[in-house]
Image (cartoon, rainbow, N blue to C red; front, side, top):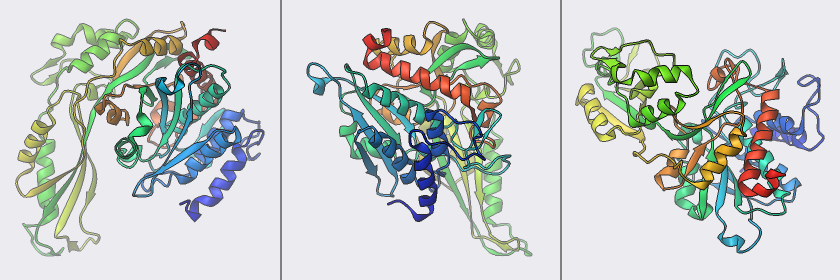
Length: 466
């Protein structure tokens, strides 16, 4: 059910998303192209997770599809989280047997947080950029996929069936979105040949794209909740049995463990694939055998690169007493652990429990098994790479240190590929999950055109060649 708090934003978003509708003059002095108008309308809908509240965003996308006479279906999880699907049948002989290509993105975004220099849900346009939470992750991808889906609806011949899928809850692990859909509505994924999702990793410097990276494998989440219990009481008393103190001591032991640097097969394949196009990757690949010594890296690693060679642990939330002068009887911490693709998760968790100590309760909130990478030796992958690169830049399979909903699909043997159609550079890339997230509109428009071209090549290569 659409919440009342989302209704005003939805009405404004629907108005802005209609063909020919302009954004308010205060936000966009120059008229935006239709796809950018739709992105702005989408960003204005606050789908911060928690709580998600994706219903209004699903309604916005559905309204655009309905204007073109395309049917949609909503799927609402037991927790009330809304996902949306729309389908284009293949044409020609036996369309009911045609393979299915899925265009998937997530409706939810992470909370905006503090530090913004623009309102995070106003979709202001400044300096040729659209500002707002979700402008990159991942509402821009959703609109690019939507434009490709609408363009494919006009094709007279489609050799693959096309499914547009906007899912809930990705930012909190996807259990109320992709995972729930796979379990409760497996019919959605019948005959799926491949899924194009977020997660692509490109390198663009000073306007030149060095390579396009199709994500085929990623790290695995291991989200944990820790609880310590102890004697509560007044803050003025000596209390050696404080739950907070026990928890802090346990976390200190866990964080003091030496990092387990290693080169996994996924990291080796990643940097060796990039070596021909990226000087940094070439330098790393050339020194793999001497990259790590007993004390750790033997050379400086660029920011963000360590995650390719480590199982990482971050303490992201802490909770104990609500008052400074009260000792709580319980204290909790939440850990975001990211495992390398081939890490023994049970062994990692067993060692972590030993370091924490027997008086700390550890609950697993989210995990993922080791799965094979998406295949790169198929005709579809070859077609995807050819269309994405368009003969202008090389395309390589990549490993990412983040996680996406693609892992749920790969667990079930469904080929999922992370595809990023936008040639983004720093500092814009650095705003994802941080303040001042923004999308350069020129980059967005080119990315929409690229996604349209890629999808056309995969569902109707004859039309793409013309």
